[in-house]
Amino acid sequence: MKTIYCLLLAIVCFSFIGCASHPNIVPSAESVPLTPGKAKIVLERTDVYLYSGVQARIDINGERVVELWGKEIYAGLFDPGKITISATSWGTSGKCTVVLNAEPDREYTFIVSAIKEHHRAATKGLMWPALLGGPIGVAIHQATYDVEENNGPFLIKPKE
Image 1 (tube, rainbow, N blue to C red):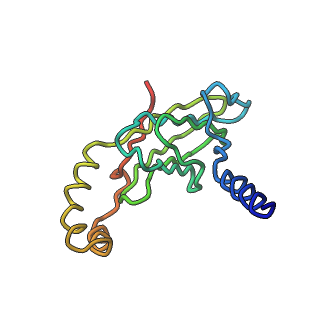
Image 2 (cartoon, rainbow, N blue to C red; image 1 turned 180 degrees about the vertical axis):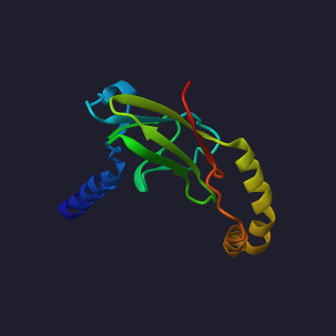
Image 3 (spheres, helix red, strand yellow; image 1 turned 60 degrees about the vertical axis):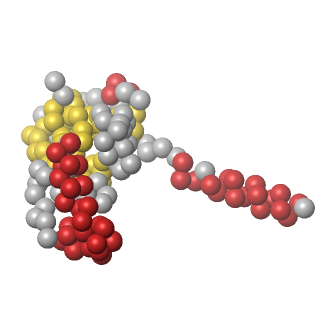
């Protein structure tokens, strides 16, 4: 009986390993102070329903910094200069890229939102390959698409 109790306790403890939050997901942009000589980038994912089942994968200068669910906020500090921000997601083609010439001691806030037109085109375009060929049909269909820099499920735009 003691062995079963210890085994159940171990399973419960190990099941919470993946539940830790990302260190750069913050409750508000003000929780990350602007450091002198750095540029602060804030990304807010606004939508909750469209693409709610996938995270917006955010790369800054070619490095994955965060994967945002709906209504999450990311804030990070970067060296001033050219900063490239890209948003993609798992299971969809294309990406949106924004290039920014960041100045020191300045904060830049962007909205990451789902593009409704991409959702309509993707579901319409993938319905028949998915029905006829299953996962292999979808893979063949997506391989025929050209991936463009601003043709993805998410849009990055400056917050007004």
